[in-house]
Length: 465
Image (cartoon, rainbow, N blue to C red; front, side, top):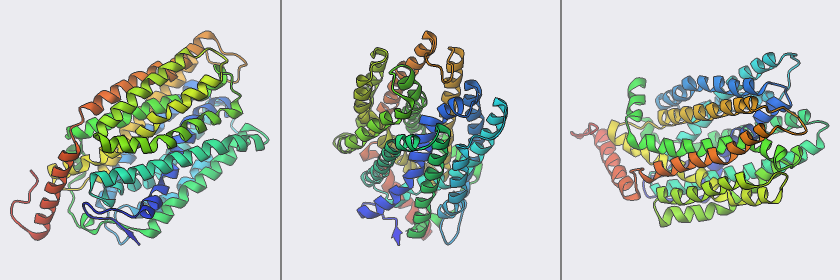
């Protein structure tokens, strides 16, 4: 069985690899196919009005305001022979796969509003079961090792698999669409396959991994106090801003890029996934450079370097002439450095905050921490998707039209260039003032370990400072 390691100990590469397989669902199902295709699927395949399509995603995310922190808090307090996290992964994996497949079914409902309600219901249920597996899965990361550089290595394995599986999905989807008799059937086939492959790694992790027993023996704070302890931490908010702003930029571009490549660059709809393939292939190639930069500099400065470069690449999308294909592929490749850094560095920074929270509160708060982070990130992404839907509608976008109006094209171009560039600039600013360096984290880990030992031995003076 595979177990967590103590401070300074290295995990075998195969342990990191098996654990990293859990990124298939977050990467492909939730992080690639839904952001890149779901809004387009709703408007141009399922026939839902753009404004309604964006709004239903926001409403579904409001449900996250309950289920993300709640699942995190409950998993922190769970005591079972399977540990704190694995029972949720076991319970949620299969329903998540089934509901994901149902997201890509076009129901026999005549009205756009009726279809929107169908997708709202299915998406809300899918998101609940996705939270049951992804939240506890993420909460396992800081348990696997207490060493900051080893955590970066674990996250690099996770995100390397995230990029590779996203790459495989992007490369496979055009062939699925070509083989299917229609785009509707193609999305149905893809949804069923992605849902199935998302569930399998979680069941494998449940079977093979063991959790850190000393963390499970700790007492826990009340739910309200747990949330307040996390929210009071300045480093938490800065790490959250870095993660949220960078992934908000990615989410906006993913949601709009299909429109950009089809209606501005003139790339056929069925070939739009090849652009995603180029971006993810490039990100995979840039992962070793990102890892090297994080070791050569602090994580936060590595992120700043990569993100400022990435920002200028987005601005170049505004300058590409209409019906010009090759520059889109070139820019997609160059964006890989920023995409790779967004996959690895914000997560690697955020897990180091947990020792600061433990020193402050005297308790581990991985579940609540992850739940709050996921909720705020998902809410921001949904606000963006809702805004995109209304921008498309208000600028005169017409689904499946041969040509779009000048105002609709200007809106699409702004959403893949100026908007993400500003978000990335703000993310780089937040990273620059992030307070936890390698030396600071080492001191926090030593203090957390000392207090944990004092509590277990009943030594006086073990109350949190």
